[in-house]
Image 1 (cartoon, rainbow, N blue to C red):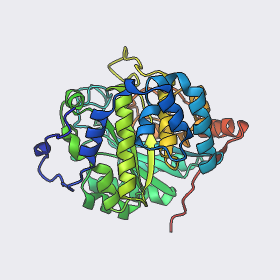
Image 2 (image 1 turned 120 degrees about the horizontal axis):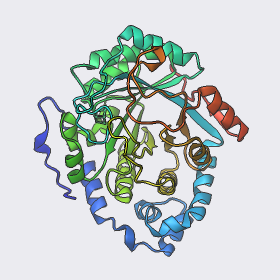
Image 3 (image 1 turned 180 degrees about the vertical axis):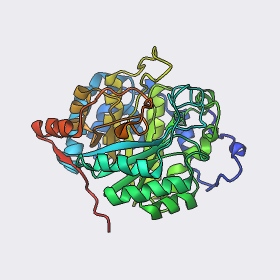
Length: 381
Ligand code: SF4
């Protein structure tokens, strides 16, 4: 990887904030040699009160893969101390699948022959009413990456509606400038999720064939711009399986860590998505095992004990049940990954989901296991 990614490819209108975090993360990833760590390094990390960057790297190493039981003890302890047995529940609402992105791994890619649609603000509100009726008070609004079809004004209108039905509104849309995040914050958005997908700039260029998403560095700085725009929380994720899993997980953790150090007030969280089959690519298989996924999530937990960790319905009910007690603190429920499916629209999903349980079923399953489903932990003032 080349730590000095060319920033000259910025498109017109893209804001530059002059952050050095990307260079530091790419340099750290370049220096990270997973095979050099020993069992002694992993045990040293596990016995540290506060695990630093080197300890985090050890926890992600191949040798640590044989020590998951020991790692799980520490991860479970950290989770219990910071979060008790609480598990936050939320659901995504897909507003639009129009997308200029040519991401080769995604069912919404502009090369996919799918039924394109964007919910009208009225239909979006109807969908929100349907979600609110399930008892959920925390939602994530998503769009594909098309400024033309789902502009900031449209997203803002949907955020305003959502903030009437829900106590916490997150957005997972295209990266924006600080002033645009400030505008959406004003409309009622609380948090921003941006997955870097892979932190390997060369692989990133191969996988992202068109659209503004091609600009690696503009995407990289999105969480900082969101915080500068006043957002309360930001979420990080690498789509595991696109690049080298250990390097991508290490880079993602380091990215979040450096942002937390610069913005101590920020609520930081991780998602741990891995590749799923998607429309028009039925033979696609998961290249990342559940064991690897668990190792990554537990390393995040031990490295950043206060961070939320979200596990999505890409994963099976049994895996989600298990990871929740160990390190994950938030899960989606009653999920539809198509646009407007709750209000009768027929649109393809962005990816295949493995856990189709309703909100009530997820809630019941958590309670049966002694966990406490939390519908919201934030009081809007
Ligand atoms: S990953 Fe995002 S930007 Fe890429 S094709 Fe899918 S929706 Fe579009």
